[in-house]
View (cartoon, one colour):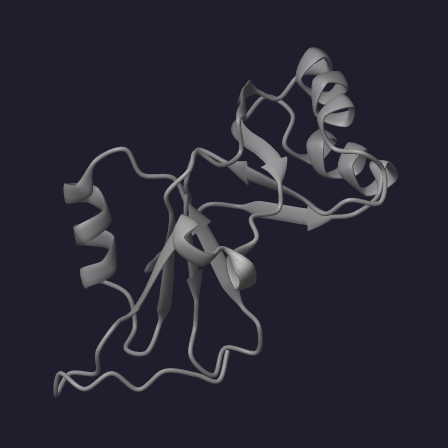
Amino acid sequence: LILIRYRAGGGNRDFELHRLLETLEGNIARMPAGASVTAFRDRQLPHRGVVNDEFIERAIELVPDGVEYLLLEQVPTFDDPFCWYHHATGTSHEELRADLEDSSGVPAAFGHYPPFLCAGDRAIQAYVPDEDGVIRPGPY
């Protein structure tokens, strides 16, 4: 799982799942300067499949009410020239059920919201340099 936060983006962020280093490198090359990229070492979002009634019931069992979750669709959304993976977060089962119903029929990954601020050695964080090669992080 990759978390992308955008410099001066007002909290805007994206998530992506990558299996191959080549696809990750290609995506990083297209990211805007100053973007913060966090790659998690451990497998995140363990519940995966097409969102249906069974997927919804299992998701509700996995994350207790009141605990933050992340739902990440695995099919990209295209709006030329942009492309992203729709994601949803929340903390209640009511929000979760609504988010899952909105993604009905779509392949998705689900689990606890990743602990990117306190991941320690369980994640690697880097920044996309400006065109002059200088790294100028934050604010995010």
